[in-house]
Image (spheres, rainbow over the protein chains, first blue to last red):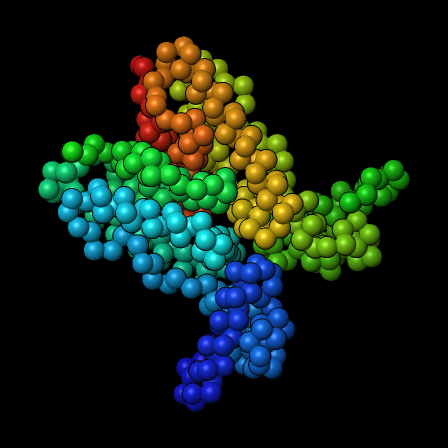
Length: 188
Length: 188
């Protein structure tokens, strides 16, 4: 990837990324080829090659969401805040665009070290944020738990991922309440 | 897909499927092209086209595991049996081949109706089997729960999927115990 200086170069780069993202969401990762992206972005194929020599690197760049807008800045009491954050995440996961990016990242990470690094960065950030929130709840006596903090993200998010991506279903507020109960005992 | 009558046709079909599966596991779904599969299987490209005109249909056929060997025939007491089944599944999910097939199926299902049908069939089978096991545990008084039975698979398997596919980690027996506790109260 280059560091654009010419504004036209920056514009074509943005147009290519937007086109790649559109194709990913609309038709899946196999559609993110140099030819299709060039056509969708309205630029020449050579321009796409100049920015990204490999289609899989372009696909990776087109997966947005490098900083996830979830689980930031917890407030006390933690349970209603965490319920709300999980609700937001569950609703996002049912959007085709978010499901596409998430599953493509997880799948690409099996073979591509760059994708694996992004996946690891993403999951580590989520774990840190959830741990911070549960620590706050424990400090204020709102939550009692013996759960290792590194397991909380899997317990809270895993079932939502399975429900949306494997069962093609939606996450009820009752299920979210149940997930919260699964990480410990909350004081009313 | 054709119905093979000639044994040579059946042999080339099997060789193509095996080659496609090998490529999927070793290099990812993007490697399952007519050309690569023909080379790997030691057959001509025209032979691959004769069996599968579309590479994505071949990929789908190459994803094995149409009948998952998990959660069948529960025994009482259910908890140790279920723990053992979850252990087996967790160990399978850490294998690159199984992770590749699972994530490719979930991802392909976002765009491909055939893949969506297979994914739905797979998750419905798992839900039915887990429900059968938990019903048995409730009938014998081993388990008390108010959980809707359709949520059990997400609660039991979702965290294992997240741990292996998103966190690239392994599932401890302690986490499995915690998952079992999350579906209800078990009698000792």
